[in-house]
Image 1 (cartoon, one colour):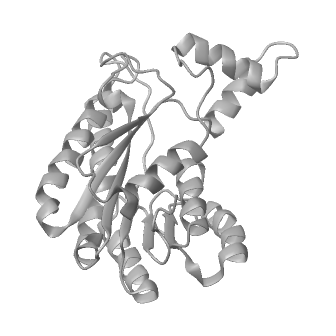
Image 2: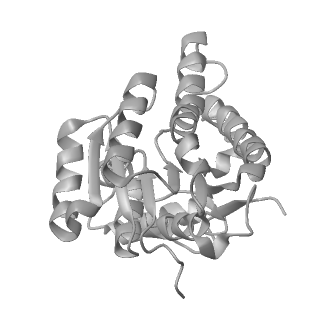
Length: 263
């Protein structure tokens, strides 16, 4: 199936590793020009090097902290200067906070609010004028299943993820007359560096990573029986961002291996 991504201009925040990097690779393979950003210059260089070697000047990599409005606007200017505009925005930056209600201080609530909301608000606000000029404009928000299925050990993240889901839905309604689609994916547990570190710290005896993760998946109630791979949410993002999903907006797609507990 041709998703119709050839020649489109995509922006991926948090693009230096995991889901963001997998998404950038997939969009490039589908023929997009891709701009990715990250806060860490060394990690950005490590990610961008192989991409440039494979895809040449279709790759733009810029250091950018999405919580810094000025840096996001500078990133936007660089993208427009290189590509002439943007068709796709993937809001992927962000991470979780482990804390219960009892041990989450006011400052932590504030930090989590700023991270979850402004990692979406700043890039969307900056790139919206360019997206409005596109004939195939799409925003994809990478969110978490915690938005619908909160966990008590991640109370702040769960609450703010629910707010981000409402934000994405609100944007989809407001932007629809401008022909800018907005959708979200809801992640379950996806294999990443943090899970590699937990495996190394917790595995017993000669237990392989696959065995350890299969046991973890059973404990977490993941029906597929394993953790997700970054390439799997990347595929969902690419579809929702593509012209193949041209009649889909305001939707949320679970990429969680069947772990959800609601209809």
